[in-house]
Picture 1: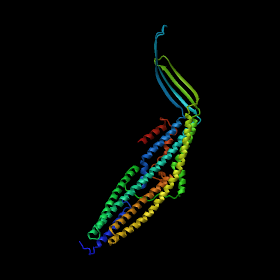
Picture 2: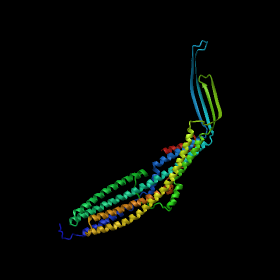
Picture 3: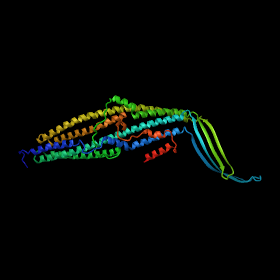
Picture 4: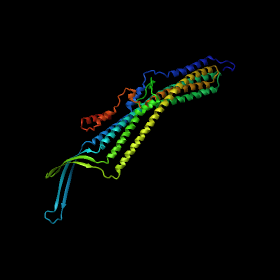
Length: 481
């Protein structure tokens, strides 16, 4: 042990101080640039589009809406039905004084027939119902586009969160290495009497905290990976930093006008209003008469072979409601109320879309400002850390000063990483708010779902045995697989 008047050796400590800065800065520089081929954001977006169960669910709901059109159109066509029955009838007579009046008899009858009914005219009620169903189809298509946007934005968030947390883990690992070196240096300096036991304890405490932060970062990364798998359909590989972000050349006000014209939520609300107005006319048409063409053909035969006969009828029927306890008037008022509600939803959607665009732009601007500020903070933090560490080797700074400077540098780097990810997410969020975050707008290399393909097959309500009906069966079997 050297005495207190002896000058401690400076060269090993100074040399270590330079190595400490090199370890920290070099570890941070290593965060940039993957060592192997990496998955891209476009890959993640394509995977999310191809594997999303939410999209599959809403595609099925769209097909159900398509079938509503078919079932309504079918009401304009002749309806054929058949019926058959076997009836056993008998009688038993007794106590009659007339000769031959007593006894029993019975017969078994077979009846079979075909009936037809064809709606000729109902003041356009069925046609209006078909038009309303078509509006619902268009509304559901826009709902599918809205879901597509949500899925793609979630994929962007999942991708960037995995990348963000991966870089956080690397940052925390480097931090553990740097503080371990700081602790080793503090112990060396304690051995030669340059620092006290307090300095060593401070370094030990900071190392324990750093290891805890590393464990937290690893846990966050694992959760981010699970979210990525849930969204994209597979575990993430080595994710590359997106080389570019969406170019947003429009002003905020222009973006709002575009969103109000073409956002899928806006278009959906407009179609819902149109359908509600048509349903008001349908409710009014329910109070008017209907004209139908009716025909029937039947045969009846006694199974004992005694008699047989044929029956038939043909005619035109006109009828309508007179009084149904106020049900029809209630249905009309209900249709008016639903139309008013859809108009209110339309106005709410306009306000929400306008607000969402404004919020998205505000978040994007804040993220951009954060990137610029964090870049400056990283530069200043690095200079400060190098200076404090060099001063510590000369005895002008304490171990706590070095640890604090290193922590500030670490926080600045973490903020920069987070801000860079936030800018990318915010840029895609602006596209989503405008209604332009779709596979077509992004030009993704995927087989896009055609929402009109199934509708074109069923819109004319093809019969099951027709050629189109058989095509539909093959389509449904393929979808089921």
